[in-house]
View 1 (spheres, helix red, strand yellow):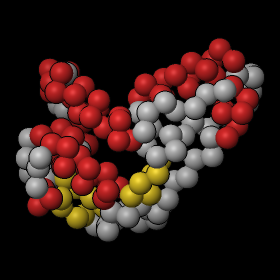
View 2 (cartoon, rainbow, N blue to C red; view 1 turned 90 degrees about the vertical axis):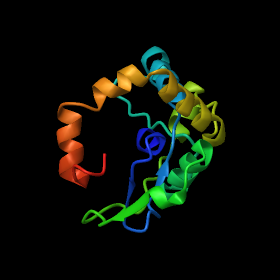
View 3 (cartoon, one colour; view 1 turned 120 degrees about the horizontal axis):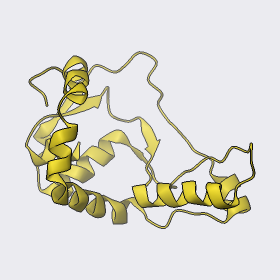
Length: 145
């Protein structure tokens, strides 16, 4: 979404965009994995969550706002059959047993993420070719990306 918005390309949003997801900053995710590796019990399952539950549409609007782009870039696409309305993560176990909690709110993490995209344009260009391009074109159409 960030890459498309930066390039003034359409941002495909499934259905009404009100599917709720728990958003987690990459640094928090990495630190949680490290906590599991260092302090977790073998064979146990630890859910990693960010306490940042927002509808997809709200995330897309936040990205557009942060980049100063118009909401007219949003393109509503047919929802996937059986698309979950909400993914809720109970991260209580990793918090209680391993003492891990996310350090970044969504509002703190979004600008950092956008900055990372700006500073890694060469990497992004390579990733957006090949298999990714074929997948994206199949999902959303060649003219969208």
